[in-house]
Image 1 (cartoon, rainbow over the protein chains, first blue to last red):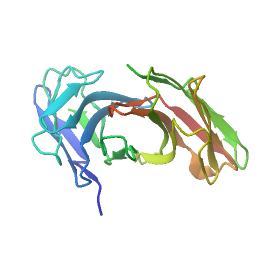
Image 2 (cartoon, each protein chain N blue to C red; image 1 turned 45 degrees about the horizontal axis):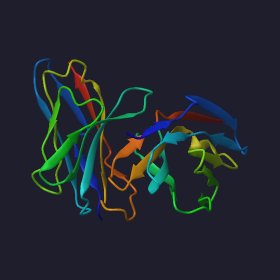
Image 3 (spheres, each protein chain N blue to C red; image 1 turned 60 degrees about the vertical axis):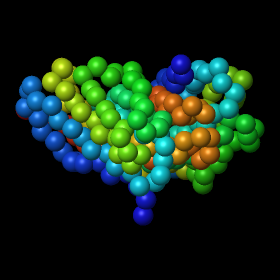
Length: 114
Length: 113
């Protein structure tokens, strides 16, 4: 079955460390997204990519970095510059173009700074 | 840039009754999609219903229906015969031809027995 896989489900980071969250999709989707969700809050866009080797900053990109070297993969690195990284992170993808633009989501990664 | 606004942070409804969640959006584009997603405590995002902007007919999915007012840029979700399993966060979302997916701040819905 096609879908989006995020790993790990839970991640703990020491202050000052960089960590990378994985997002892989086998849906052949062109566009991929990373969102941050704080407790009781909505989804805020961190980065998105509409095509391989291209990505754009979202509303809260500071302290984060991404790459899109393969269509299937869109990893997110939370750097030490992100002052408050504890949150729930969701990865999503859409097919691209203008056909059936429903977004598919991974199950999320909960990141905690210890 | 597109914006999506959900003006009701929290709502509650008695089981079996009907509730309407509000959503407004701002865009200069003519062709786009609108969605309602449900996020239960498991945090998995579940698509509830989808509306294409070029379709005048309001979308329906079983107990879920929308009231899409394109001129007013309004996209409300009506849940009929509310069930305890409908308790969740509900997000309104907008997607355009450029694939910029934007979400509202969410409405927390509590269905009371």
